[in-house]
Length: 471
Image 1 (cartoon, helix red, strand yellow):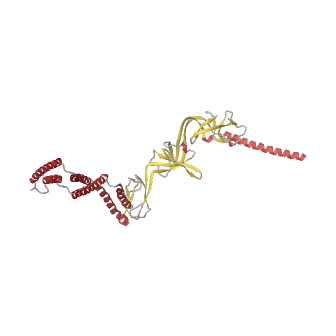
Image 2: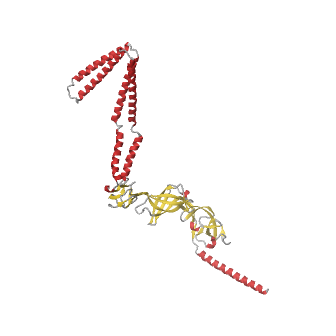
Image 3: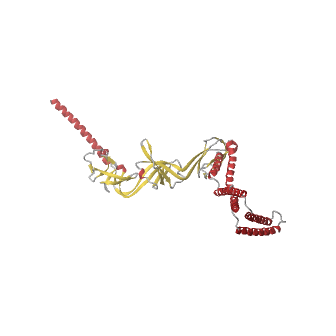
């Protein structure tokens, strides 16, 4: 029994010594940590809240231009760094090296263009005027035929006969007068304008006289069934001719058929596309950033020729986490910096926010496009940019250093140094944040409190020692 007590006593002494030694070392470490504390006063201030990301500078528009057919480079019109206009020819293949289909495309293009011109020419003013004159002449002929048929079918009245006789007398007088006028110029050359004028007047007067005479004869003559049948057939024929003339006139008024124009233009476009295989043209205005061809080079379809970039706008595409994307809006200011350009910041603006996110390995990000507003020659496409998007700017808010925030029992806290030299854990709720500070929305932290930036690890456990206060 005595031995048991001795063993127990030895165990108690050993355990007690171990505990004392451990507490001594812990206290020594604690004292050393307390001497190295870094602090900052909690204070009111302005906060610029940002969302940070990185991306690569790109031009507003980029095109890789390749040859579409085989041949020998015959001309190179631009060099790298040169500014070009839309549809400017950058290089061309030698004519003799082109395939037969490309060479013949020039003839096809000329023929197709002529076909389109002919299509429009058929609807020119002269054709339209001639069609209108034919309609007018046929309308007059139809009226005469209708009157003749009516006169053949009906019994002539004396008043109509008297009127027809008077019309014939007037027509005869007009014919005689026209004959006298023409007789004065009959000896003139046939191409004399005055002679031609009076000859046309004579012909018109003769026609009117013949019509008047025929009307009178129709009124005076006995009508046979055969005459009526002939008159009806003449009227039907003239009416059909009038309908055709009116349709042709309307077609000319409407212009070419849209389908005919589309077909003719398609032939032109097809020939032009084949002809353009021999050339490299700039698809938009920009700067030549790569120029590969040299005169005499043998090329084939797919061989790279040029790269053209529209450097009028420089953009940066960055990926923003789904946690932050709802804080990003078009128009927000942006601060950009580049590893390749030391000690200089550039200003930008958010110009586009993706509506749909992309998932990679379970992480959802959204593409945000930023435009540089003050880019200079130092900024080039392909450079990596650090982007800070300003999502809010707050004034006179209580600021908490980000490096001082810890998690205790599942909530955020900061440790403050009391006037007695002890540490207290203060629960806080944070709002907007920048790279260095965050806005305190709720908590017992007050302006003037001394915030510990590097609390000892012993204070950062879920169950702090009893001598650590919790406000």
